[in-house]
Length: 135
Image (cartoon, rainbow, N blue to C red; front, side, top):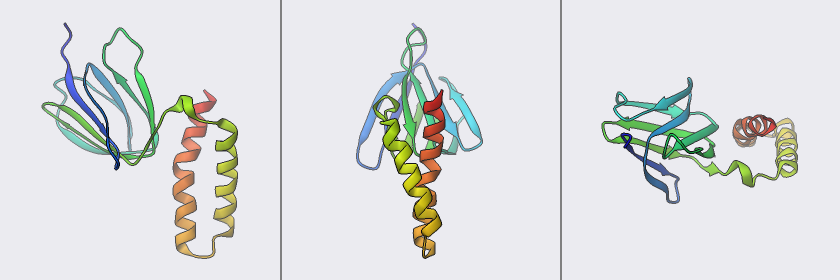
C-alpha cells in the first residue's frame, strides 16, 4: 500500500475534509506545488486557484477552487486554511460573468478606498476562477 499522509481542508465555518491522502497539489502564492508524504515542513500563502486532492494515485483527484488562504506542511501531512472553497462543477458561468461585470462597474464607481478594496477583492478570485473554467 502506498504511503499516505494526513490532510485537512478547513474553512472559517467548518472542517471540510479530514483524510489520509497520497498527494495534494496546492496553488501557492509563488506557483503550484505538490506535497507528498515526507515533504519538508513549510508554510505558504495560497492564491486563488485549484487544489487537487489525491486519496489514491490511481483515481482522479477531488478538485476545489480556493479563494486564497494558507497551507502548513509538517511531518504528519498538511493543513489548508482556506478563505473559502467552491466546487468548480457547481459554478453558473453566466452568473460568474455577470458578477465580474458588476464588480468591474463597482471598481470604476468606487467612492472611497473601502469600496475600491471590496471590488478588487472580489475580482481577485473571480477572474482566476473564470480563467480556470475556460479550460
